[in-house]
Image (cartoon, rainbow, N blue to C red):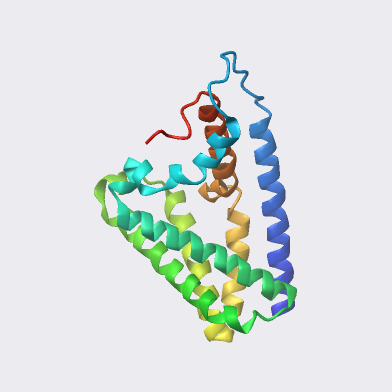
Amino acid sequence: MGQPLHLAVLAAAAWAVGALAVTWLRARGFGRRVLLAPAAGDRSAGVCYAFTRAMLPQAKESVRMHLPSYAAGMVFHLGTFAAFGVLAFVLAGVDLPAAVVWPARIATLAGALGGLALLAKRALTPHLRGLSSPDDFVANLLTTSFAALAGAASLRPQLQTAWLVVATMLLLYLPIGKIRHCIFFFSSRAYLGAFFGYRGTFPSAS
């Protein structure tokens, strides 16, 4: 079962990378906005600020007002990245370094708990539930299951088959659902920083 599933995950990963690349290129196809006003600041400083201090709670009102959700989201994303790292080792047929095994388990399982907390909040909070689409729930369930099984399979190897099946499903879904923000987050954040850096608004004076 292992080898065919490995091939399925690799095929799904190739699909995800190719589809995301096409989506990104289509977005780029709208062209670049020409700024006619003279520069009042530094684009690169704006981009640096957008990816660092602008993401901290003190710079984002939506974060300051929802610190537990912010923390859960950070742990959720960390656990997902860790799960993909573990997946890369498994597909390469290489054992995780001994020093990394337990940190990876903790990160993936904590990430799954963070995902479950966010899913519960979305499902149980009336206004969030009203704003949510099926994609919001499917994306969370797939990602949370992927992180949970990554950690669980390292403790119970017999769960690896289920993990690889979920990994394949997640990669197939990635370019067509909200998870495609994994590329648009970086491109939109860079554009935001470059634009407001050019206008002299980023970095913030506060």
